[in-house]
Image (cartoon, rainbow, N blue to C red):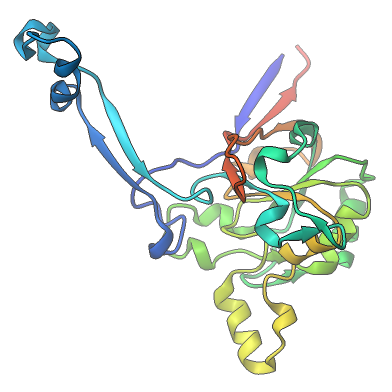
Length: 259
């Protein structure tokens, strides 16, 4: 028996899923509000000629490619990848990367702003008794998953550092994911570290791994707590936007459960 778990969040108004400046804006128009759009197609047609005077329901959406659950392309992280190659845009990402075996790292015990290391990844893989394979999709369950929809969501959860990300990429992983707002630690925490050290290498360090090895990651996943450690597939095909840095995806996990 096949079980599908939805790993995506809603795209909606007022979700606290992004900083206020980046939040999506959706305008809903009901069936009776859109007759002015339908009638001009058919000269002589009146609203009262339509069943219940209704045309269609439609929504006008103002969003960025990074609203909602989305897949970041290597181009989002930098203009180059693989130490100098032109970075792939979202329409160029191999679809084979986006439908693979899934592995979950449970990092919910790490505090907000913690930056996971290669040793943390290695320890978790040892705990779940799993050896990474090329093209595995690795998703990270952080505390942020429990704060989705809450005002503190953007600041919640741990992040993946440069060495932790490279640990995955060097073993053939090309798609990763998190239930947090960013693959990296929340900016509010990194900003404090930068203020104390003036070390710019701390900023967005997990993303910057893509300069060395091209990869993609999923952000704002949900329901990762419902997944086993491994033994499932992740499907995350992105919307095909030419030349874009990311694409929205209805990411899901597929589990095969014995009848």
